[in-house]
Amino acid sequence: MSKIIQLLAEGEYLSTEQMGQVLGMDNAEVEAELKRLKDEGVLLGWIPVLHPEHEDEDTVRAVIEVKINPEREDGFDRIAERISKFDRVESCYLMSGAYDLLVVLRAQNLKRVASFVFEKLASIDGVTSTATHFMLKAYKEQGHLLAQAASEADKPAVSP
Image (cartoon, rainbow, N blue to C red; front, side):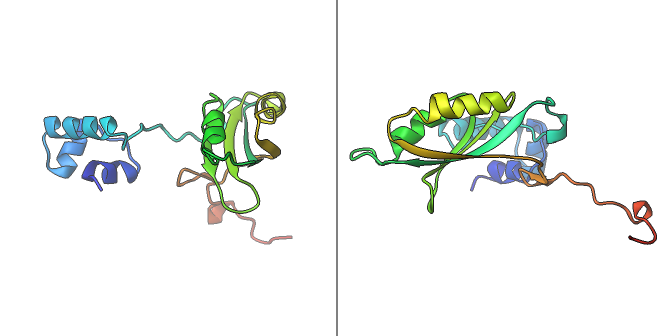
């Protein structure tokens, strides 16, 4: 694994200079390695991890289980790639078990999730069924714990 990938995977944003200092490389070496990793499709990008409470109040995140009929030539790939191209789909995984694809999406409200499922997803040839689950509350996001543990001072002396 690339030293830069290992450093990025540890989670903190670092400038090129900071990466160089940590890894003992100069800026040109770090920039060249980052370019190589992007060009080779190893490093797809990075995004900040935001606390869900700071999203728009109406934003909805959903997980959709999708059953599909695999195609003779392409198996699950063509349908999975088609679903993945929708902008509101954040992730799409081929799964083992009771369903074939797990689709994660974010939408502005419940109505938009519903319309995506019945207008876009369910109408694709080969999709045989869907089951939508709405995310109600996040406790951990991309490896970051979201809940703040109550301090001992905040706890009542006697619980009911």
